[in-house]
Length: 115
Image (tube, rainbow, N blue to C red):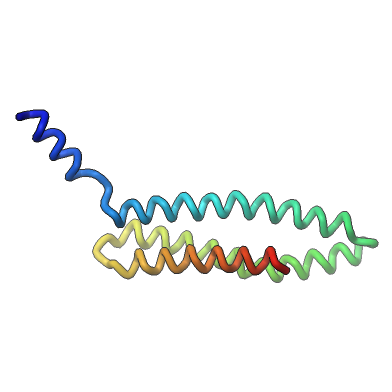
């Protein structure tokens, strides 16, 4: 009987669907960050190595860095939404906002990589 109560208590304390969604989104955002850092570094190195002059390299880097602003802003929004979803359990909108921010982040990275 005690083991049945223990199992019931453990199941009752398990993660909710909301907790699972937040955790999965956290993992996805961090994976996107890691992938983006690798892409960004390689892309900047490619810009510099393909430039014919220092001025051309600087111009192309400035252009690229202006374009990547959308991605950096999307990361900021995603991490803010993640924080809100973790802190505001009583508001279902915070989870919806987090999922939308993660989707927007993916779209921003995809758009930058296509340029």
